[in-house]
Image (cartoon, rainbow, N blue to C red; front, side, top):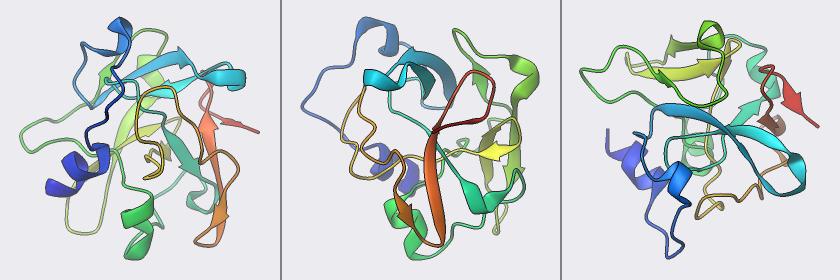
Length: 145
């Protein structure tokens, strides 16, 4: 889907060598600023959960996905990849309206924040919009608050 590649965007910043190698749908654990080790995609972009999702289907649609693009699997890919530090038993998917598969961790649908323009950024941490809080996700699969 175009939204995923648009959401991930290009950045003038060069990712670290550790985040240079995986596909976008590879979920990894990496240190991000003072937050410690949190979930990132295969390119090192920070991933978030949306509290109103309540570990169920996504409640982020419409304008919400413009600001908080979901981590989607490309067509033809059935499962996300568990990268370094990730518990494969917690990694999964949920089906969005329209049939696309969104990557989940500990049943939380995962998202990017549009204002994070490159690896290692987490400017969406604690943001309250679209009806709830957005938090980065820790190794346990819970919000890092």
